Length: 268
Ligand SMILES: O=c1ccn([C@@H]2O[C@H](COP(=O)(O)O)[C@@H](O)[C@H]2O)c(=O)[nH]1
Image (cartoon, rainbow, N blue to C red; front, side, top):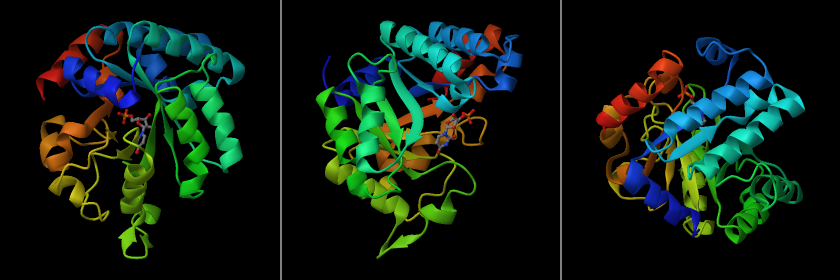
């Protein structure tokens, strides 16, 4: 199987950097003529996995949209993750977990346990409880050749309220990138929204030189960033970017899904 970083590089080399977000919100399910239920979320996820297979290499289920249906939602998520991994798609579980170290181990066992039905290739995490709180999760991820993505500069408009805050002489966003590089052994990437001005977040160096770790970049499409601008947004680190898109690719429902993905790939 190989390390997550190696699997990610192979996937991007073969299929390009686009990652299809699986976000079965009420609106999305309506657009796909599906019921707003766990069964609808399951069907939605399976349709997206089917459309992605052979066309792109990475999917990112948004856990919140499954969690809203409780245990049935988690069953649906398990089936979607299993179908994606069976189709050799890399699965980044967008759960944004962050807690004290012992609890983080619980999350790691859930998302990376060999026999866990939620077993994913990578997980989004928050470092808000302190860098060392991620140690157990990282160890566990490394053991099973999985990866983490640490929130640095998220794509939402209010992100800067905390992430531009200063720790000594650098911003929180900058420290998150430094931390991922320091402790991650190449298997921790960072989340940097494509909508953000990197200089304002104190992370202009991402554009100036290759940061050497994967960047999960949401914000393309529905949130306003243009795929055509990927290189100007991320500069020297552009080659590290995984461009995550959900609504932009699912716009128009199931009938347009494959064409939307093809059109997005043509922009790169
Ligand atoms: O900084 C972040 C981190 C995660 N997200 C998630 O990505 C998708 C974006 O959906 P779009 O429809 O492409 O806007 C969604 O699941 C978010 O929770 C993010 O947007 N920004």
